Image 1 (cartoon, rainbow, N blue to C red):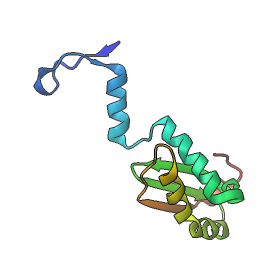
Image 2: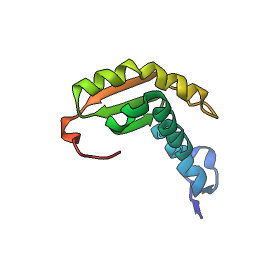
Image 3: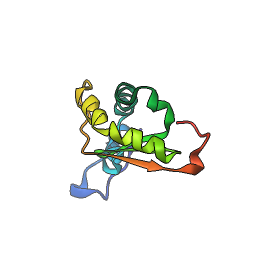
Length: 113
């Protein structure tokens, strides 16, 4: 199936839906499903048992955002943020990350990833 791009730049013809969705995913900064899996593997390696304290982990563009529901756990995760960047750099293929942000969301108590 294709999307009609008659009004697109240069008057190009139809573009395959898969290509259009891939472009949209990249434009929005949403990681590929493969990159998301590599993120979760890297988090398990970098954080060890602390990974169980995360209520959410997201990769958008080159920033990883980790959410916990306790300020004490946030500090413990923050101390290992460099390990997260290192593990993602060792992934195959590597995932480029420029920053790891940690947020506390007490409303997240009891939620799962």
